[in-house]
Amino acid sequence: MPSFHDLTLTNIHKSTRNAVVLTLKSADPAQFKFKQGQYLTFRRDFNGVELRRSYSISAGRSEGILQVGIKQVDGGTFSTWANTDLAVGDVMQAMPPMGSFSTKLEANAQKTYLAFAGGSGITPIISTLKTILATEPNSQFTLIYANQNVNSIMFREELEDLKNTYLSRLTLIHILERDSQNIDLFTGRIDAEKCDLLFKHWVNITSVDTVFICGPEPMMHAIDASLKTHGLTKDQIKFELFTAPQQGRAAQPAKHQNTALPDGTQTTITLDGATRSFTIAQNQSLLEAGLANKIDIPFSCKAGVCLSCRCKVLKGEVEMIANHALEDYEVEKGYILSCQSYPLTAELMVDYDQ
Ligand SMILES: Cc1cc2nc3c(=O)[nH]c(=O)nc-3n(C[C@H](O)[C@H](O)[C@H](O)COP(=O)(O)OP(=O)(O)OC[C@H]3O[C@@H](n4cnc5c(N)ncnc54)[C@H](O)[C@@H]3O)c2cc1C
Image (cartoon, rainbow, N blue to C red; front, side, top):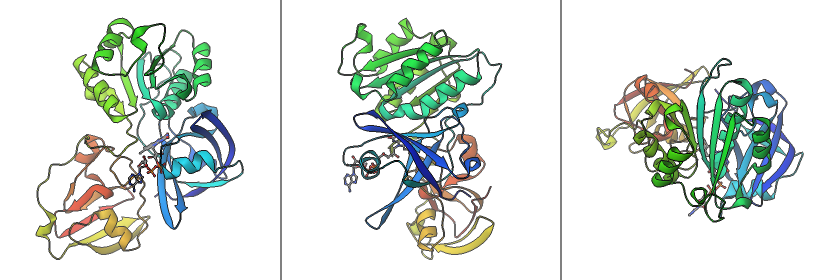
């Protein structure tokens, strides 16, 4: 079961006016081995309130470093602190890497990858791009990266360097909302119409094997819909959502109100090899009840977006009101997100160690 570990900040690089790239070092590097596209969940106390925030790893797997990119959100607590208060030598606390925004790497593959990133959504995508280009020498990668203007492009120089290194295998298209460019199509927002034109003139969509998308939610939905219209299947499209969204995948339909359980639900959980029992009250999620009973259930976003609070139901049933992280096959096997799960039965047994 993941727990928090100290990471020492060894470098801070200002990627844009309001985004930093942090390089971190663990005393136990084996704990922080990662797959491309995974993220770290940090915790920090802000005036007595512990915040947990996830940030995607921007380093490639073969680079031998641990790096995250954090864009400052207006009024955002953690991202503002990370952009303004951190100094080299500071110690941050993070859980080992998590997330499944990746595909299997195959050295002999001859694949065509397409990625769409918007703003800070570039962080897991640049990790994926660097890793794939370094480990699959016969694969091609096209990145379409949307930003407001040139100055808000994160990793701008690094992307240019990568383009020069992988001249024949990496295509880089910047779409800028406010700055005009030589090609009209590259100005504005990415919507269905722009996707149609990009697929007509710049990307041979019929040859694409896998698409990665990470950015603002409306942009992600527009791209997803367009890709499906152009013949791609759900399995070919990989998403990473940064925000707590309104829509998602594989959410279970509502069956009962848990007000039908006036005495609550007798719950047994196994976590780190120990088994504990407690009652989940009416209208309490599994995570809320566990934390109220002083059980250190791992969590981060509390919005069904990350996978930190994933567990498996062994007995009983829950209603999962949102799921933006588990794959359909995991839901079918009984995996749930504790933060979004409300019991439907008088008895519940779950396991966090599977
Ligand atoms: C899997 C995953 C990976 C991610 N990777 C990255 C990444 O690589 N890079 C990156 O930059 N981000 C990433 N994020 C997003 C990141 O985790 C944070 O959500 C983001 O940095 C904002 O956190 P914050 O604490 O700064 O903002 P918060 O304090 O949570 O605020 C967010 C917004 O809500 C508003 N707000 C806050 N409190 C209130 C209130 N009481 N009333 C009204 N409005 C309020 C704020 O003004 C702000 O606009 C990722 C998220 C996930 C789930």
